Image (tube, rainbow, N blue to C red; front, side, top):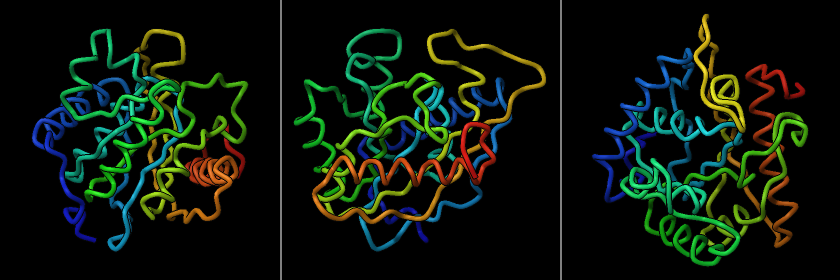
Length: 223
């Protein structure tokens, strides 16, 4: 597929530069095993949905986008865009703030992005779940992914991130280890959601992500 058939976001050039910078930084702490190809549909709107274990997940996602010269609107927790050292950067790459309070505006912006031909990326868990909440390597998904997919007739492509939690565990500072841990990323086949039971649809997406993790031999997933 010609991945450039997805419309670049307005911030594409800076998005790419940021992705290359994240690639270098992440590679210093981990061995990155990124996909060689991105098997994305070329005739449908696409939502990319990944698991969320670490604050490093965004950096790894940006490295994938940089590798394939892609840009995406990305849903990000609103509090991270309101304050802290990364807030300005998140705004500069065109991220969409999301929270329970901002659900309607966030979903509206996401639907507009997909309808305009952009990729949309999100993590249906909506937060960093504790490991004890994981089932087959993933936490519970929230229904927003279903509402957006059905509103735009988009397919959902599941993505598995394995190993980011070894570099930047939940609730701790990043750590450098030697030998470097390996971070693996893979995509699964598109998921077509149907019906209006958004909770069930979100669970279907999370099960698809768990299947990708199992294919990566993730230690928390069941093959």
